[in-house]
Image (cartoon, rainbow, N blue to C red; front, side):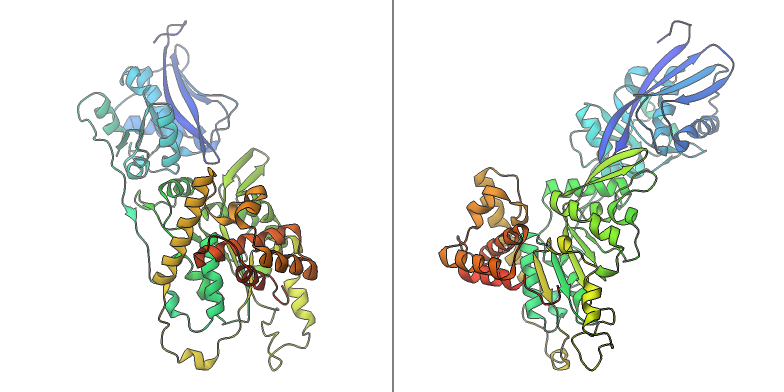
Length: 510
């Protein structure tokens, strides 16, 4: 295509990532008479601006000389910031189409992304999965590096062409050596290895873990060092049901942006993230220069375990309050306002005080019991109120360590959890509600499906008045009671279910 000045025009297509959304970008290339110059415009960042040198070197390695003319590449829409090295390949395609090495019509039918090395090889980039979704919406194919093909092919609505190099792309579109479409990677199975049978004693803690898994309830465990809090949390993924295909795709989209998908495989196992208490705000909730997803988003549809909970910075803990309620985190920076999904199960562990031995008079420090109030006081009341289950984990007796392994392990508990989840899904489908677990319900729906019988209601009201439950705490007790009833196979919520739910709400010191 010629422009008005006798130059040549061509366009390729790619995406710019805005959170998990892949927004379409048209890469326009004009080769026109004038002094030799290669310019990239349209709000490129440093990595995009450097693409011209990588493209120039890659073409030179294939003995393709750039014309001695003015080359202008425009990334449209021009007011959308463009970040990342994945713009290399679409810029090269638009330029090759403009100088008539590649057919313009073929180039216009693909969404391309990939980084170029100086010898023309295609380097894998993050975000192939959401890019394939965007290509499917545009009814185009996806062109990407070979290492990204298995990941992108999970979006069956878009044909994926995964090439090892720019030379292979040229041979494909000129018909010399067509590339076969990529196939999806392997579904990664359950990792296994950590079984509840390994935990000696702590039967009440195991029961709380089962309830939390069945209804996706947030759990806080308070106990001295060595009581098994971290050990219990590490075994939580083993009792969670596999992700549904929809959940697995949503979780893998976030992991694709973070570069965490291995060999193109999508895992059906719920993610388990355990950031250290020294992690920064950007690491936990997301952010940084390019507003990348944080641990809360990487734990989407899975578990976020925060050990030494009071040791996290106060600002990090308070930032968790909003995503716990909404299932979404808005990362706001000077140059970016990005929303990421983060519907996770928060499991927190804390010592009762700084020394950890508040409940042992022989080992507690001289500041007991005030040290416990000061230490757990770092967790604000509003944040504490968002935990459905609060559990005291006592020290394990030496006699318990010599007991044989428990007869019931993760497999048996997982079966009950899966059955309870199935009951919840069937209930919500019958009601035409998109919720998947009891933790998601609120308002009139909560009152409809989780309202206890007369005796249970009387107990709940008595507890609410006696201990001053907030409206949020009142409703969270109802949700937990509904989950306990589902585990019990009960159609309604009775007094015993409410009593057990309340027992996990009234923890001394928390």
